[in-house]
Length: 115
Image: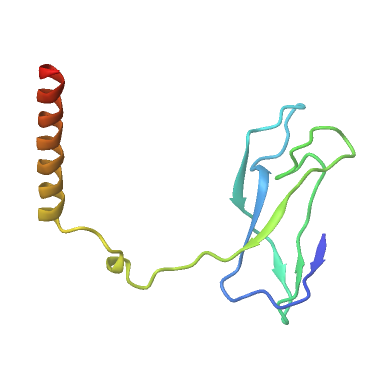
């Protein structure tokens, strides 16, 4: 299979397929999942992708002979350079919030018991 894109694919692109990660054996198709495809060739200009598909082979979700259902997608997964930059509340703030919510819950229960 050869796919030509109108623009060059970005650096770090990965190629993924959706379907069974193993070939069909005895007419039994394995569960379908997204998996990274190996053996994909990307041209020097980064516009043409070439890979092989086989009826009832890896990625073919259709067990019928002569029919291939084999979704394919180029994917770029962003890499965080500094995972510590994710904003989170300070532990004291979470404890304070828990105490306030607990007190509000106790107060609500007291009002329900009176009314």
